[in-house]
Image 1: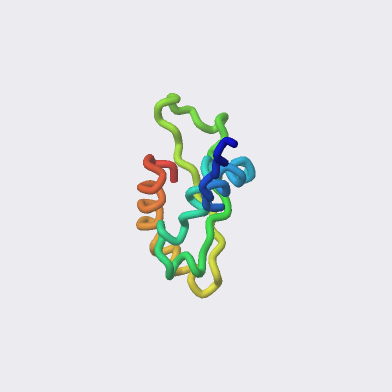
Image 2 (image 1 turned 90 degrees about the vertical axis):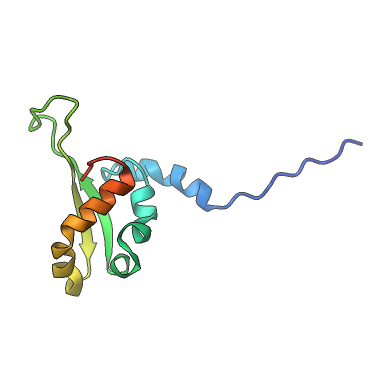
Length: 107
């Protein structure tokens, strides 16, 4: 009798990215990592009161730039009322963190 082959258990989190990516693409996100790792990108305190909603990319008809220089997107966030002004003041730092996470000047 041949020995049974056992497969190793795989964490559910390994499957989430592939399942969620097509849905997030409709919201302008190229990949799910921005949403899945939001607390790592902005920190636990800001992640508790904010979440990314979508990336608004400029329309191609407005872009009159060469293909090599792409106009960055606008990151739309949902923020609880009391933290909105603080998030607005921290916008340059948040943009820097998001771009560092994505690896290019996307926002």
